[in-house]
Image (tube, rainbow over all chains, first blue to last red; front, side):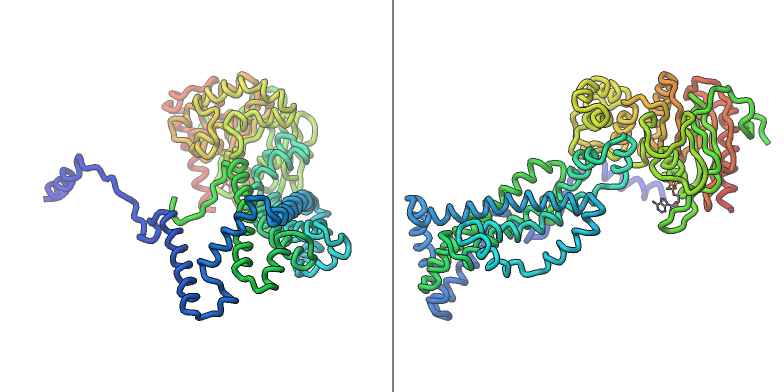
Length: 287
Length: 269
Ligand SMILES: Nc1ncnc2c1ncn2[C@@H]1O[C@H](COP(=O)(O)OP(=O)(O)OP(=O)(O)O)[C@@H](O)[C@H]1O
Ligand SMILES: [Mg+2]
């Protein structure tokens, strides 16, 4: 009896492939592009509805159509080398210089804090203290020290972006695993060799996390600097448009600005992919 | 007791001592765990010694102290007449985990010790040797593969090559083949024996496999846990070079049984 019972299912299994599909819930299996378009349509649809029904005043919220028209106008001005292009270029310079400065300072301080006991004991507490301050409040100081030119904006942008880079670098240096440290010791590596050939590469994922947070902060810093310290950048255009109650213009300027921020962020992401190629960042719920 | 098993260090082939440990103890300050208590050992040049003992009895600790990675709390370690007070060039060490660096390919990982000691140019020159070593351990064709594409056993084999490339006089091995299947493990063990003989290297191996310990070693240090200490040093007088078919001889079986008995007893304590 037991013979028969165990034989039948075996014969059945024979020759049947057990290829099976991993189940994915419906919402996770939607392709990215369709999902993104869906969210966009819902967003703009709601927006259109709210403005069409005049639930809010047009001065507060323009219609999507008005905004699009204004974006085309601004886009034309930018493409034909109008005054807006000059303003955008100033802001882009502030962002690039601010980010470069933040990387240089943040990286050096991160190594000081993450690698030396002195830095960790004596410098880190002050960094934490400064980091908890509302950094935007320093803007008037930077203007007083550096004037109304781009220098004060670069300084504020760098000031805001430096801290996440310090923290990322220090955390990265601490992340190297104990075995790797011991291995480098047995190989007779010097402190510098250990730092550059082992700790820094091991810490790159965290360093890039810091850079990405910094990339977002640098934009905020530059625009805040322009709001509070004048100048001729894109932030100034936004401020002027807002004071004239030209809300569609404010919207379209912000959208163009976010493009610049996006490009900076994507550049950092791209660098991360190239440099930290071995480290796979899990983004979604699926492989 | 058994005649095949000599109980102490009498009448060994008297080559000069390389490593000498006297009354080494280690208490970890962090948690006050007594990892080692009063361990004394002598390793002679060209000898092969294994350490066996239950998990947590201080084998890795002992190895780290010998390598100069951590200081003992008490006692004295000397290597080739000089006290060990830090890591040294003539020691090659392999850890329980393979620890390959993911941003370097297999060969680049292997020549890393050369790169660190003598610079990039020397490392480039050593690439040929790295390829040979990879072939010996059966990783031909995986030279330019990054570690996250290697299996655990493959990574261990690559890290063996990394240790061997500098031709160290002393090899300290912490369960180097734990991730290998039995067949490749036997093969790697024979390869290890050959390399040790060729370079006249002194080897000190931590293992959980009694068979592996017996087939490779001149002496087996059996350790007891809590606190970690040496229960007995068992001499293996099988002829050299060892071959895999010695594993079927009665003498081999006797020694294995003897050690197993001792470890079982340790379990009861
Ligand atoms: N860095 C450390 N700090 C504190 N205690 C430690 C440390 N490393 C090991 N120990 C303790 O020392 C004891 C011996 O550890 P060790 O790693 O030497 O054991 P082992 O014999 O190598 O074990 P296994 O066979 O599992 O590798 C253990 O009780 C462990 O908890
Ligand atoms: Mg161990």
